[in-house]
Length: 448
Image 1 (cartoon, rainbow, N blue to C red):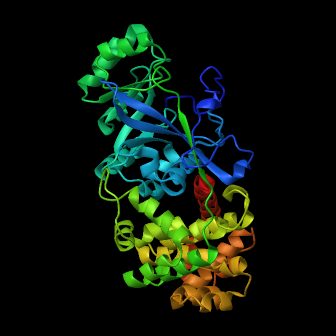
Image 2: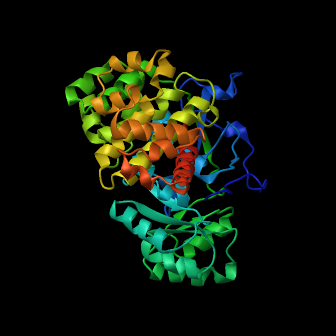
Image 3: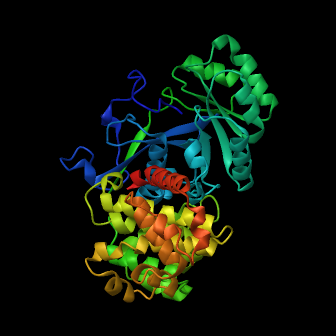
C-alpha cells in the first residue's frame, strides 16, 4: 500500500482536504450535505520512469477526509470494489489505466473477485496474508484466469517472500521500512526473478533517485502525489425493478425479455453498464448497447450484483447495519453453501437455492404476502413452491436456513424420513455454514 491501512500513523495521513476533488460533476465536498448521501474512494498515481501515469492504487475512504479508517480489511476492499465498479464507474476512476486493489486472504477465496476484470485490476496481496499451500494454489488459479498479482509492503528477503515469488508478477518495495543498506541486494534479487518492481512510499527526491538508480520500474508515494478523493452521490435503485430483474434471471428469461425490462429502469441500467464496462473486452473498450452489456456480463454476474441492492435500495441504513439486508444476504449465501453440500457439483441447484433465499423475503420489501408477491413474477416452480408451499428439497432447505438463522432446532427437518440426504447437516455443519454466510455478508455489505 502507498499508505497505512489504518490511521495510526498520523505522519502518513494526508489531512489536507483542500485538494480533495469530486468524482461527480457539480458535487462540492464542502457543501453542507449529509455524508450519507455520498460514497468516497481514494486513488494514488503509480508513475513510470519517465513520470507518466501508469496505474492507480485504489484506497478505502469513508469520508472526504483524505485518510483511511479501517477496522476490517475485507469490508474495506469490498467497498473499494463496489464503489469503483457500481457507484463511480471504472472509466471515471481509472480512465485507460489499471487499478491496484488491496486484497486479503478472505476475499482472495471468494468468487466476488471475478467481478473485477483481470484486464483492469491488479490484485495487491496484503502483507499480513498467511502463506501456505492453499494460498499459493489460489494465486496460481487467479493468474491462470488472467489476473496480475502484486506483493505489497515488501522490505526484506524472507522465506514467505521466496515462496510467493513464483506466483507474483509485481513486487512493491516499501521505502519507509526497507533498510537502505539492503535495498541494492533486495532489488537485484527481485529483478533476477523477473519481477516488475514498484518503489512505494517514496517521500523525497533522494528516495526517487535511489529507486531509479536501482532499476525500479514504477514509483508511488507522497513525493509525487497524495491520494485524491473521488466522490459520487449514493445511488438507490428501484426495488420493484430489481425484483423483476431477479425474477427474470431466476427463470432463465431470454435476452430480449431481459433487455426490455432493463430499458424501463435507467438507474439499474447505469449500475449494469458500470459493472460490464469494468470487465468487458479489455482496456479502453466500452459496451455500446444494453444487449451487448447483458451478453458480456452474464446473468450470474448480474444476479449477484442486483441481489443485495434489492434489499438496501430504499433504506437509509448502511448495508452492514440494516437487519433486512443482513437476513437476506446471510440466508441466500447459507442456502447456496448448503445446496452444494446436498448436491455436490450441481451448480444449477446451488444458484436456485441462492435465489430462493433472496426471494423468500421479497414480500417484506413490497409489503405483501409471499404468494401475491411471487405470483406476479413468473418465477420457476422450484423457487416459487419452495417459498410459498415449502415443497420438495428446496422447501426443506429453506426451512433449515430459516431455523438455523434464528438459532432454532433443526433436528426435525434434517431427520425427515423422505429427506435422508439432509443428514449431512449436523449441528457442527450448520454452525459452520452460518459462520461462512455471515463472513461472506460482512465482506460484501459495506459496498453501498
